[in-house]
Length: 513
Image 1 (cartoon, rainbow, N blue to C red):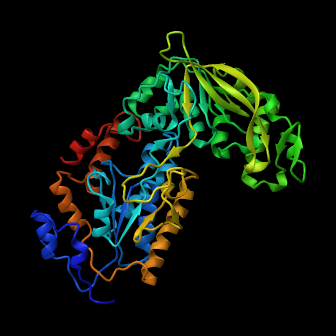
Image 2 (image 1 turned 60 degrees about the horizontal axis):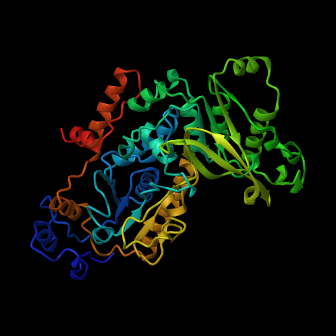
Image 3 (image 1 turned 30 degrees about the horizontal axis):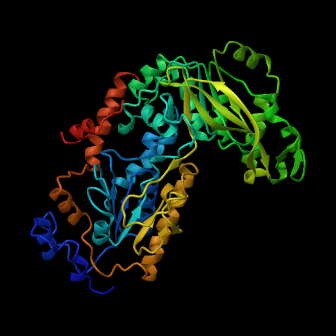
């Protein structure tokens, strides 16, 4: 490798003005007074976002190459993204991945900088000047809108905001959903939709032992919701949840399923045929064409909806005080207001039929509609990424950064991983593989020389100076551990794994003590 040096042409971004950090850069001095000009340089990589995508990308980079240095920047003072703010409170086993992420964060070649809003406190262009490579892994923080009249009524919420509310996301702290109605309708049939349904219907004794926030627990204790309908535009053989989440609904204490038999017409026959064919006017994929997880999921759905339960299950259902059920072949067309026009009173659903088969089946309107009375509508039809910086290419139609195997198009040295790369799809394991692929692309570019690391880069030393100039004080991982310790102590006092701090101000106060 040739001797590394900082080229003057690369410093144009920082060479205007007379600030301390500019002078330091010109003289090759970092914020600590140490020189960052050396004759041997390591690849310095910046990752934007500390959720699963960010940490899995960092993990692979550090393990695969012994000289790479990784800095992770996060907008909030706390790490772990959707593992902290998205995973359901009653799924603590899923959150165990935090232990792996903590090991990565504590690695000698990895640093965490929370409370840094990339795109506002520091631009992507400035990060590109400071690092050999920048990986965007900031996820999908926006909501896909349903696009029907009445969507903005009181009582209509996105699943993202509702989940953020019960999981302690600071921006959702004041959501205060109205739970005074008897019936709730959830639009969408993925795992997040089932998480929301389960939280709405779970016995308080179960939720009290989780890390659900205290305000959410208190609101759910007063909730009048007794029935939850989970609505999807296609059929039982296209439902988007996984069997684990369905099984949890089936076995949820104090509840019983209530399905529409007509929604399952043709499904038993479809599980026995060899090729795709149309049955009862609906196109259904043959079981021979289905992956095993899809087959098992369909069988459990059908069993729950159609089979007469045994004596023990029959007794359990008879004593149930709450109801849940899927409604298939339905699309929302309008949300109704009450007579005062102040809140939600119901929803109109169009009845669909399917054209095509399997995963490619399309919902087509039949012209029929049905109205459902409800006081709560939660839209769970997907998350959506937003552009972070005008300099970064962004496909607004697909809501992703255009890329090839994580390499951002027409932007050398810029990469992406996670939902920003693929769209909001899959589980944490999917994100892991997705992020490993991006890390491999980056390392391939280093090895081939496509990514030039022959010139030394200052990395966090110069970014820290820049942030100080702008009045931004990052939160380190050891600062986060102060927050973590306090939350666990507060949780232990009331029999929970943790009691989360709910505002950025509280988090920063603890981090800086």
